[in-house]
Length: 259
Image (cartoon, rainbow, N blue to C red; front, side, top):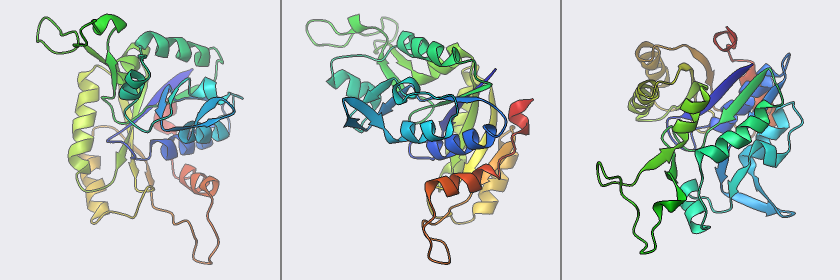
């Protein structure tokens, strides 16, 4: 059973688009489970907080998972999850994430794809609930007088997930990609591939040159380049999200993921 974590150079970089395309490509001959442990920016439907990204993942995964199984920790406000949690007088913990992930792993899918939130170093908040004393001041780490935080990357490390990096192809992407990759490696996590994503907007200037630079700078294979697809095709027909995913899935080199 293989387990991959999808991270990106920043937020709104196309993690969900890439995740759906990967799942769509993989489900042609494999059972694929999806997991998006944390989301913020949800709609309350029939008493359940529904995140649009998790809803999309559920349409492509083929293990008959419910939305809450795919996305167990959800917040209504579209803000940083740990801040949303704090506003609701709760906390996100690594123990919670591991517990929910164990449920997904129990499906025994051939491949489990985990989509992150934000970028690589997404804060989960302070490491324990007792970090909020009665006087309202945050508990400080004795060593450096700063709050002791946990991050979503700690979950990835503890779960020994292999990482696929989505690079949002825009001005600054070279710096963002290298810093993210170097941080992943410094954390002792295996980053195995990257995807050049232009699907979230019009192509950047000098796109091919920037991709060529990243192919030289990142010592991991580029398994796909997702180009921008307009919502209306040249004949005036609407192009659905499913059609865009189907097109993107055809351009993924899955070989480096399946060795």
